[in-house]
Length: 537
Image 1 (tube, rainbow, N blue to C red):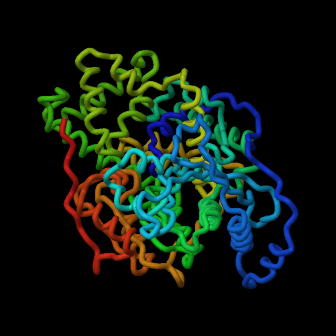
Image 2: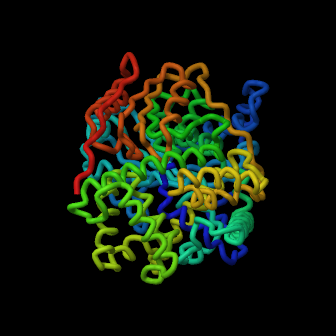
Image 3: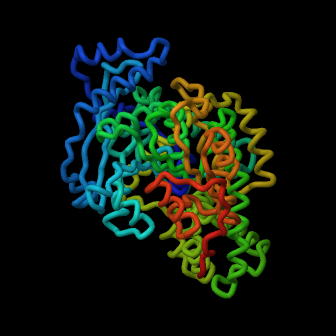
């Protein structure tokens, strides 16, 4: 999912000492239910799930309240003409008149005429744990890829529940979270595994201690219900939504729960929505895909040996990588960068093509004797308290949502068997990924059954966009969502693997995304596009 593991994957190796506190900023108690709301509840279809009843009540309430748009707080980094506001939602949709939480939202108006306006386009960048609040900046920064869409739509971002300004959760003290160097994710033996298991269990305990009231409700279905309340608060009858990475799963669940509330839905870089994949198997599948894309990058580095001087073949570059890991394990670089921090930095390359050159350059500079270049790139900034708090929060939400969405294996032998087997062929990310997700094995709060994503009456055609060699969300996920959402269209970027395809210059894709958002038109059949330009040093 889109919130890169650069900050997450290196963190769980040091859960450390937990500080017991309940972080519940922004929690309110709702006023007594109005007669109108109670009548509304009585009129809803008998047999509907209690949470869906609650979502309808909350949306009705939000539609009446609207959003009180104001200039954004100065420390949010969102300058005029971007505006910010709040939307109130139930903590528990089964109890819509109970405790409420506030969600932060922001917007920038469409750049075209009033006649050109088609409503609001709401965005989620993934994670789980990613903030969408920077989305309106695409307009103020005059991003050419979004100029046509911005004429027609207000760009709306939001912090999902638990994220950022929206009743943020926490599992560990942020300074403890970023402490480095951490234990090498690749275990030398059973003793290392026991240490990592203890750290993961301590992290799960910390989540329960610091954010326990929120945890049972940190699910994708609840975030989808929040999304519908935001839609209502915006005054929109139907939702226009762009979801990237985990945002595609959020969109898929929304489309299943609220099919007749969808107007346009773009799913970019797709999480496999199968119940069998959410979330344990999806993470194992990631390990395989990351190795594929890592090998692509190693090959590219070798092709540019004249620039980087790291080896003329993929095997030679990989040998150099293994030597770097071994050296950092024996003597952490700059005292801060061990194997865990190296993986946290280097995994940006298989995630995004835009990171191919910077990662290779930092490595090349290190090999040429400039140690500080790699320390600056890979080591945590222990003085950045705000950034570290945001990283810790993002990791907490990632863990909370994935652990709550589905039932995870509780038996360590299952984890050990699966990850030992995968590591033999796909060593780049496997153990790092395993330790990051292992808190779900001892999770204290309820683990739910995932929504069965499917086409329901009223769902309009959906646009799916995916690269075949995506590491974070393997291509099979796009095929699965296309199969489940009847009438959808799939745009495939062949022989490419950057995560987040709609943000890359490729006219074959960009023009079709624009056309869909502006007119609702899709091609008569699925489309294959040539890859975007390969990065150059």
